[in-house]
Image (cartoon, rainbow, N blue to C red; front, side):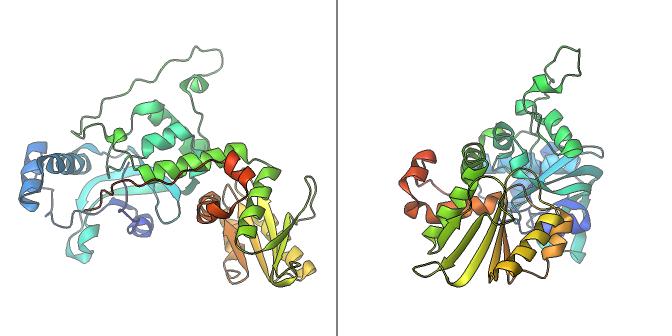
Length: 348
């Protein structure tokens, strides 16, 4: 697994160019250095006075990039910018791109990206936690990660426990794991607590607000934002799950039509239906809650509708819930109990 910057600053660059890596602009071309010990010396020279623990971790990650990742390896890259996961096959080992690229885009491997928009909701909580290390480069091994990631790449679903991976009629066997020899001390315990908390909240909403409950949650968020909402009852809704507006009667602009779809990705027919319903009802704006995301065709259909239609995927719903949580009804707070805490930032 390789991250593409603390804030995802290399997300799209990596996907567009078939690379993964970057960072470490202080370091020269690592091609001449063929052992971990040599990498450690170069790292120490680049960061004089840095704590020994930090140098140890940096050197371990750089050696993984320079010497351990090989063609044929499965590569996972969580995307900060889209809150999704990209996966592909490594096609070439370490390269230094030189002065033709920005300083933080030079230490790379080449990747054939197979999927760039896997929803985090497709990954079960324990595997998300395994992927949630704050370490930039490491090889996940816990929770049967390798077999499950390969299954995600091929089928788009997380089979979960190893017992689900055995062929019919064959006794399940635990997949052996190779200890992480990169020198990173327990990379999967160096948790990105912010992302881990978001993933946990997302999983809780997915489990406890399924079906019409998700519609009720979205309506509560909109009401906390100043709308008056009319929620359709469970069952067929003719394309309208929520109608909302401003003012004491909910009739003032902007008037909003909302469709709420849980589960898997939403295709273009749902987008076309929303556009038609907006016209029929004279709505000013539309909101499509697509918990599992949109297909490429659906995204293309919405490309020129960003001034009239918004899409909330799972990450957007969670963000909206956190933004309005203090103003949500007590019943929802009981069903989704959250507590705000302070933690020490690891930013340098």
